[in-house]
Structures are given as C-alpha cells and as structure tokens.
Image (cartoon, rainbow over all chains, first blue to last red; front, side, top):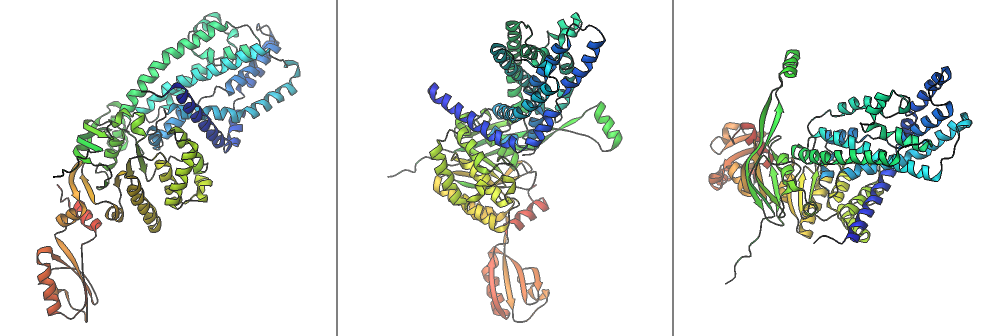
Length: 270
Length: 334
C-alpha cells in the first residue's frame, strides 16, 4: 500500500528544504564566480545601446523608455532562466559522479533543479544591485510594475525557466549516447538568441519572422515574461497555454529518452 | 530430527553477461579519417555466463586482474548497467528496475569516486542522504554518532571535504554510503590508495558492520590483506568468466601446491645443497626460502632438520597475491 499522501508530501518537503539549503551553501562558496556570470549576462544592455541609437535615427515603433524597460526586464528574466544542466550532467557522467546519485531513491533531476534554484538565489542580490545601478544611470526609465503584473511576470519567468530547463534536460539525455552532447546546446543557442527576444524585442521583427518565432518555444523564454514585467500588453492566457503545450510535448520525450538512456548507460568513469 | 533452515540467497546471478560496443579506430591521421568516414565498432564481452549466489550475512571477496569484469559485474548487481544476457536478483528485486525499496537496501562504494559534496562538510551531505532515505532527524543523528564512533570520525565531519585526508574522506564516504543501513554492500576497492593504518581501520570497520548488522558484503580489492582478513569465501573472475567460487583456503591449496619453508642456518650453503629437498626461491646469506610440494612436506622438513645445521625453521603458504599474480601472469587459467 502506498504511503499516505500527507506523509509523502512531508518527505518531499524535507528533501526540497535540505537539498535547497545544502545547494545554496555550496553556491555561496562560488559567489565570486556567480557575480562574474551575472555580469557576463549584460547582453540586453549592449543591445539597448545599439537599438537606442537606431531609434534616435528614426522610428522603430518603440520609444527609448519602452526600449530601456524592455531590455532591463529581459536582463532580469534572463538572469533567472539561465540553465546549465547539460554541462553539469555531461561532466558528472564523464567523471563517474552520476552513478552514486543514480543509486539513491531520488530522481536525479531534482538535484539539478535544486542546484539551479539555489544558484538563482545566490544571484538575486547582484541582479538587484545591477538593476539599482541601471536606474541610477537612467532615472527616466524607472517604473513600478503593478502588483498583478509583477506577480504575473514572476510566474511567467518561473514557467520560462521550467520550459528552458525541460528543453535542455531533454537534450541532455543525448549524453547517454555521446560524450560531447553539449555541442547540441551550443547549436541551439543561436535560434534561442535571435528568437527569444534577447537581441531585440520581437515586436521589432518583420511580421513573418515574428509569426514564425511564436511557433517555437523561444519567445516564451525571454520576450513574453520581459514584456509582462515591462508593463506591455501580452496575450497572457495564450502565452501560458503555449508554454504548457511545449512542456506537454517535451515531457514524454524526456521520459522516454531517460528510460532508454538508462538502458544504454555504461557508468563510465565509475 | 531437526532440519537445517532453508536460507534464501540475497544475491543471485544466473548466466550473467555484458557486452560493450566499442569504437575500433586505427592510430594516425589515415586511421582517424577512415574512422570519421566509416565508423567501425566491435563487441567486447566484459562478462560472460557468470553465475553465483550469496546468502544473507556472507562476506565474499571478488578477485580478478584489472579488466577481468569485477566492476562491470558490480554495476550490474547494483542496477547501474543492464545485463546483455542472464538474470540478476538482489534482495528480491531486479536491480535494473531501480525500485526505491531496492535502492534503500543496497549501497555501492567505489574507492575512487565520491558522493560527498566537495566544498561542504560531510555533515551537509549526510543531512541530504538522511532526507532522501527518509530517516527521521533524531534517528539520523543517532546513526551518524554510531557510525562515526565505529569509524573513529569526529571533528572531521564538520570540515569541508576538500580539507580532509584521503583516509578521512574514505571513512566519511563509507559513513554516507551506510547511513541508510543497507543490507547488501557492494564495495569496489574501498581501501584503494589508503596507507596501511587507514586500510586496517576500514577493514576492521567493515568486519564490525557485517557482524553488527548482519549485512551481506561483496568486496573487490587489490589488497589481498583485505580479502584474507575479511572474506572466508571468494569469487575469482578471469577474462569475464567465473573461474572459482569457494573458500579462500581451498583456492590457496588448489593454486599453490607447494608450501614455503624458511630456514636459518648456522653457516651459509650453496643452492646445490638444497636440490634434493625442493625448489630454491632465495638464498640470502644464512637465510634460505624453499618451495616444497605439500605431500612431501613432512618428510622433507624431517630430512632438513636431520641433515643440516638448522637454527630456525618456519612453514607458510606463499602470499595469496603472489599466487594469483603468478596465475594471471602465466595465463594459467586459460
């Protein structure tokens, strides 16, 4: 007979608390490195500089304040949707660290999710400082998002992170067959960069490209949550439905590849 | 009349086999280009037709040269890899199904690999393990204290793992691997790289754990002292096939038909003086080592004592590592 639900929930809560706190302690050991990573994510600010110059030259359809708020929001969303599970998994696989984890009665994925969430928590104060600095340098761009759009933006960012994690974790399964599966992620980074809204708001793209982009999962990873945070109008329900649809498509593929991958696993390095 | 209770095997392997597919590439640029255009692979049978069973509470040594198939077999027994052929059952489960109940009953310790978080004290990793295995906090504290005492660990549990010596780290790894009190232990070279004192401490801990909790242990080790001290029974694997399954004593007798006789003489003698007694191993001044067939041992020792001016004499088996090393080296198993 399975354990009562309440007992199982308490067990899950304890695992989550302990995993998150130990991973947070671990991440704090690497706080200097995380600051550098946070600083290296300033691409949206560079793009803001470029697009502001273009805007000054003549009508983009977005004024400089809108652009500033969009790129600042894109920076924040990007900071909390960075996923590196494939790189860690590949390393763990190659040096044999995967095996002891696979022998514990906890699905491996939760260790990586906890590591990502803890890293985001470590990142949080530095992101807040950079946002503060941005407003100091560009006070005209300051705005308070309404509580509802803030909550919605947090939800959309969490969903974006979940989708991006699921997508990369599905690709990660290739590590069971190839020792250098991260090359795939690098290949995927290009469409992510252009179609997610990191280099430009999708509103500035030609109609055909924009239509195409919204048939891919990428705009939901930056553009949509960033526009919600910046206070722009976004088809919220449609966007969340699209994210759910992509997750529903990726999840069974992920589970299938996981099961097949485990059959193929050779526990190398262990 | 009393009948012997029937004991069910806790580990059972039947016709177990594992074949790996490996890339077959010739060296050099031409080989690389050929391999790029026409990738060829070949099959390597790492383990073939291995069958054995282990009863609860047994301490079994798993011997074999490097690449003989020991680790591959352990990986199949723990469910890390799927067998290509045969069946395996551990604690009533098929390991490759990785059911939570099965995972809660076993552990695998690999001497060169670690599960402890490198930058944090072992206690942090132990806290995670306690939560994962559902051990209540008070009970986990009690178990940590008990195992730490058995392993002679104290303050080390509060120091970052990276600051611990190899021996301390290995002991902390053992603690982490045993916190959930598994009933089946698969130990792959748990004393590798440790100094003699640390090896002895780990050895005595394992014997203690086996006695105290009735755990079943399958141990591979390159240190024969581990095997001779802990394992009444050994499995010997060679080129993927099980060559021997039985007591260590019988193996020694079977593989070493001679016993070693050490003599200390009054005065040095040449090798020709010992030709009629047995095979001379070494002569160093007044000290001589001879190999004498077991069946002629009593007779020859009597003759040695009667014929020569002997100050001291001792008889022993040659070290087991010498026997097995020689065996593998000579390919005597083929």
